[in-house]
Image (tube, rainbow, N blue to C red):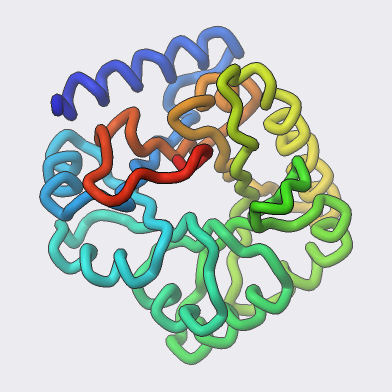
Length: 235
């Protein structure tokens, strides 16, 4: 596995997508999805300049984070159960998978106990897939102000996991709807939401063209996982 070649190839593809959409490459943040990869792979990627890593499970992250450079920032990108909120608030720099008002309140409670403010993204299930977590857009718009009013929650933007498709063009409407939804949320709050986290190894170029400011790439950067094979649609 050649991490350097992988990273250079991905950065070239990001830059090309930005050129096509009239954006600067610097406007897109690359998050490396490290689930299923050992700490040694994370450390090697960090040496190449990557600094933000995403984990799906709190328990796996707890075992890995202490073995990696302290300067790295870790985001929780998988579903968070309420009984894991304490650890999530402690170990992660951002929780990208807030999918209910109840979960936001629980994160707020543990952040208050820790005397810290917790940056979060709200996960949206734009396509309404029954197999995926996330807010329905209409419900999000109804509860957004209440989430934003939680004193220990710092709302940075939205996240989505698009439906799996062999042809990435088929999920372009999902990414476009996310961009539009973020605009609606900004109008409701009267404040900017700078982060739009969308796009994974199979569809990130389309996501960038539609306005993603953060893409979550696993295999395209870090190579095949050593853990059991993920299901279709994983990062």
